[in-house]
Image (cartoon, rainbow, N blue to C red):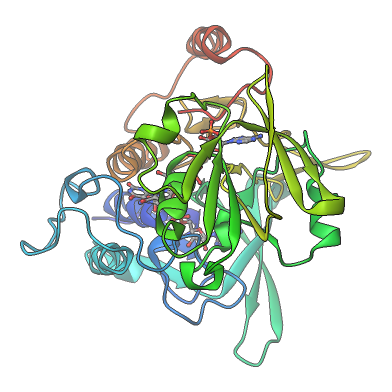
Length: 380
Ligand SMILES: Cc1cc2nc3c(=O)[nH]c(=O)nc-3n(C[C@H](O)[C@H](O)[C@H](O)COP(=O)(O)OP(=O)(O)OC[C@H]3O[C@@H](n4cnc5c(N)ncnc54)[C@H](O)[C@@H]3O)c2cc1C
Ligand SMILES: NC(=O)c1ccc[n+]([C@@H]2O[C@H](COP(=O)([O-])OP(=O)(O)OC[C@H]3O[C@@H](n4cnc5c(N)ncnc54)[C@H](OP(=O)(O)O)[C@@H]3O)[C@@H](O)[C@H]2O)c1
């Protein structure tokens, strides 16, 4: 493929960043991939050596969807791979996908390199995206670099910054009992919870999976969920030591107890709670994308519950030379990021028309109808 001579920065080398890189290379772009970890693979890269960036994927995790829903269309899994593979097998699949890049000489992979600032700047009478990054060397030194690009693709994943409930006294509990409260992101293995009373907050995939791993190891595992029903404890939770409880009314720091409520009745734990694991999900974290103003820097994307002003969850409305891959949650991620990457690469190459102002207004109206104009939940 003839090179377009245009430079694209891809931030993140997980499933999304790899798919984006592949499609951009196929369109003839020169691609620089920034990855803060020691290798590609994103959350599926659980190998030691990732320094400050451990994965939220814990030991022993198996996929919760069949690998057929985690397949890039041009890259089959090994025939003998389990239908629900363990995390390291998904990591190997992504490593193998990374070796299939077309024109790899047009790609530069910058490992151990974290992007800290992305903004549009004027340079040589033209407009460019300036990407500032820090590369950590093995002796711990950091080297800063700023590079200019025609386009930027943000593919940093959605599972890094914990969503921390504000309606009860988490800071008070954390300060009184340091080390007794973690988020699912930092959960590693069940053994360190042996014979303890553990409260798991939230019954999404993390809450469900982690509480299941703890049942039988811990003394008691309470799973608190706003979706609690009286019959849940009988059906969903298999062991008597694995108990469904309603939403938290209060964390009682003085005696390490917790009060739950379904809105009508209140119930309190009988024994002190030794550990709390927040399985309350994640929020978006795009604070590094900025705009310089006369009054100082502002974030291009305020709020953390949804990413506003992004056409079809991909292109930044005001400047579609900035694109996101992998923003939607609760989707078949691999399929979605592959399709998004194909669209982005063709749009950057000018092979498809993006949108008109009327399209933007229509999509915005639809979005406002669906999720409201406030911050009402993650998109997807
Ligand atoms: C515990 C857990 C289990 C999951 N299980 C499944 C499953 O079974 N099936 C499924 O389909 N999906 C699952 N997912 C969803 C998973 O996130 C997707 O499968 C997919 O890996 C997302 O890829 P991504 O590239 O968008 O993000 P990530 O995999 O998070 O990759 C983002 C990359 O960007 C890098 N990065 C971030 N910020 C910067 C920066 N500023 N500078 C440089 N690099 C940066 C990160 O280091 C990372 O390598 C799971 C997620 C979690 C957290
Ligand atoms: N492969 C696997 O087995 C596996 C394991 C873990 C995670 N994952 C993946 O990882 C990603 C993240 O999953 P996740 O479970 O961490 O996040 P999530 O899907 O966002 O779920 C978070 C849960 O937190 C609860 N919650 C949110 N705010 C709360 C609040 N203020 N107070 C109490 N509870 C609150 C809600 O559960 P309730 O309404 O039930 O309380 C919600 O379902 C998903 O893509 C998931 O599929 C996969």
